[in-house]
Length: 218
Image 1 (cartoon, rainbow, N blue to C red):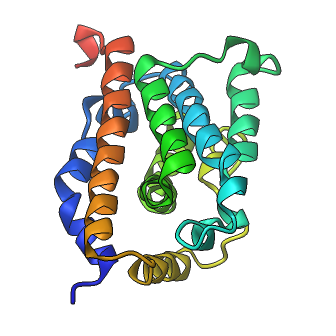
Image 2: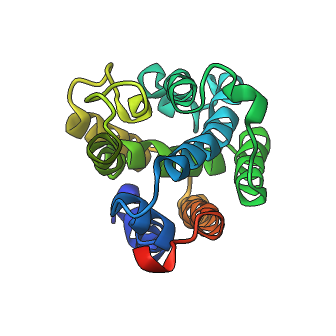
């Protein structure tokens, strides 16, 4: 039988590609947008991770979601340090979620409250993405805007407590493969992974509208 982690990757390939190749992210990684766009993106991430991590405690003993709640993945403290660097000490006062971000965070909360398998779908798409493609964003941000290597501004992407990211990701996928869910529930979780990528792409689309390229930069 096909491992569940493989099923998810196969089922979400198109949505994953759409998120990775969004115009906003392509322009950001290509150095065609300024640090203000990066800061705004980081701000949106705060809302999503606040939803993920503020609800995690209630799922700690859940047989489906509980095994995935590893403390070394926690991102909120690093995000807040980055925002203080990017926005200044009063960063919370200007914090604002795009409607698309609010919809994303609301969906995460709804899954946390009503459907642990759906929460796992969002947990997987975020944290394993941070450990993979997120490292490309860190590298580009360091080079484009002069942040210190793995310093303030990019700490969100630095997992100090994970010595071997490749091994950690393998272990995470093994957890997925052993998730206590029948075939129908696994299909539902895979579909929610696709929804998570679509919600993320909607945020990118909204950010792209907020930070359009000047004609001369296109």
